Every structure is written in C-alpha cells, then in structure tokens.
Image (cartoon, rainbow, N blue to C red; front, side, top):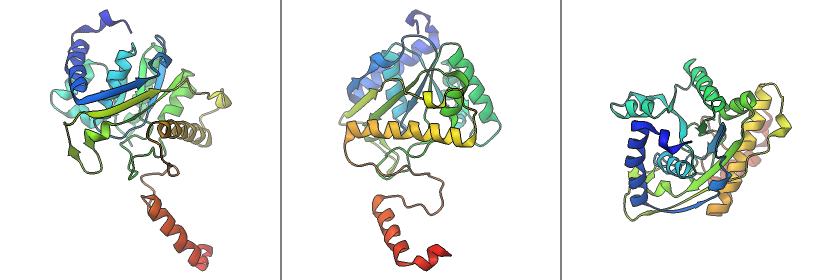
Length: 258
C-alpha cells in the first residue's frame, strides 16, 4: 500500500479511527513485519468484540497495508457508515444467501489485485463464554484454494475491555490493554492443488482456527476448550457444562446406545 494514494475517504478514516484507538488503548503490537509489504494477502483474525475491527485495522495500517474487511452487509445499510465503508473499499457479506458468493468473488479479485483482505473465519464474535475461537466458516479456505496467496494469522486480546459482547457493555476508561500479534504465513501446503470438497474445506478451516487458538494462548494463557460451533443445538457453552454433560452421558449408557 502506498500511503500517498489513500485518497480523501481513506485518509478521513485514518484521521478518525487512529486517534480514537490511540486514546482508548494501550497497545502491545508484535509481528507487524510478518505482513507482506506488497502483493495479495489473506489475513485471518480471531473475533472477540465489535471494537476489534478498529484495533486490527489500525495495526494493519501501521504495518503498511490498507485492510479490506469482509464485513456484515447490515453495516453497509447504516446511514453515513455504510457510505464510508464502501468509500474505503470494504466488502459486504450477506451470509446465508447467494450474495455471499459475490463477496467471495470480490475478495478473490481483491487478493489477485494485490490487496490485503481481512477475514474473520468465525463470521461473528465468539460465542464461547471466555471468548476463545470457535469453529470457523469456510470462506478463508475457499479464498486460499482459489488464490494460493499467503495466509497471515493475527490474534488479539483486549478489545473486549472496550466493548464486551457477552455483557453488551461499553467501557471507554480506563484505557484498555490491547495485544495484537501477527504470526508467520501459515503452511497450508498439505492442501496445495486440492479440490474444494467439503472435507478439504473443513480440514483447512479447522487448521486455521486451531492455529489462531494456539497463538491466542501465548497472549492470554489458560487452557482453551475444543473448537465449538455456535449453531450446534444442545452444545454446552462452557467447560463446566461440557463436563456435566459428559458425566450425565456416562451415567446413561442405554440412552447413548439408542
């Protein structure tokens, strides 16, 4: 990305977002040099808060690239915001519709044109009680199979202090401690040349999400739970609930057999 080619609206976005993030956060940023200085790249990120797109956008911009996010189409319908998102070249996604294919086509075109396309593989903020990564959707895997572009993993912890999706509470002070780390390009060579079958897409997606989860452990510590799918009916939402369900199932073997 060449800074002098930002144009009015991108420069306006930088002048609006960057000072706000600098005021609201105390930042620990590492690994920015791992984001390629030029050429198409796919950036995959964990999603923990509605505030984290602004923080990761700041990070990627300061790394020298302009981030093009795949974002929920509903954001583009908000007056003023929607116009600004289009003006700064973000990509709307209407999930669960045929328009989602158009979003992937736009992302593919962006990567091939040398852009830095940012994807939240989970598709939404994490539903895990402790905000660990969930099982992802297959968009990033499809995009990589189509383009073979470098996939750079980024993890963050701290934006949930600004806006916590679990409590829906906004807190502007004290300043949030935000850590963002970019990893080395992911080695997806095991799937090079593979067809985009359901199994292949699932394998790549799970590999990406497990990689993000392991990177996140380095920031926040602790023991992460298994990858969990938000829409899975009856799935326990916490480790304690999982343990309770396992104990219950062990006590009712006849029900398991049925």
